[in-house]
Length: 214
Image (cartoon, rainbow, N blue to C red; front, side):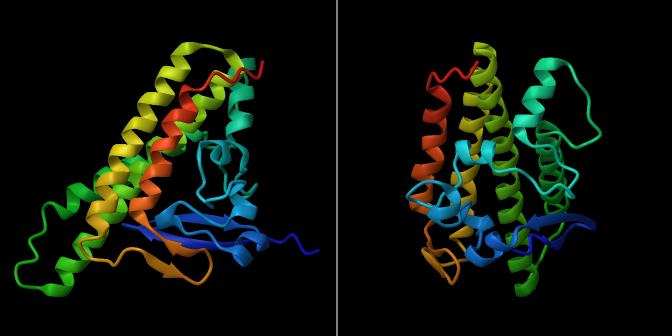
């Protein structure tokens, strides 16, 4: 089987980020706006990529990003890396999203309909970026807690994932002002932002569970 990976370049206000997918991911699909793929990839019945899947699903080795398990191991052992850690990646997402919302807040579309729609789309995706930033950080703290038993990591995870839920709700509400819901996609089926909110909230419950892996 050919394990060559494909990549897609996404330009976000001039800063291009590379996203990498395995052939299997391309075949089954992943919907970023719904944080889901299909059960065979997500490892659960819903297709939603929950905290557990964020921990176990590794980044492509050419992305320059460090996996959550590798980061946890490094943090415990006091190692170093040239890769972008999950917490660094989360901060980058926040920086991009915050900067985008700052820029669009200074633009008045006046009576330009297409510009108004475009600014709304940028706000929507910026809120999604905030969600992913908090979710990546929260997932990392969950993994740290499971390995160390340090309750401060669990508290940090709950805090991050609670923020993720708040941003998801704002994102979903904003998205539906300009998009239909649920939305049919040919790779993952229906994406329902309201239904997904329940699964996003479940991530907080995952963080609250005692699951020591030491």
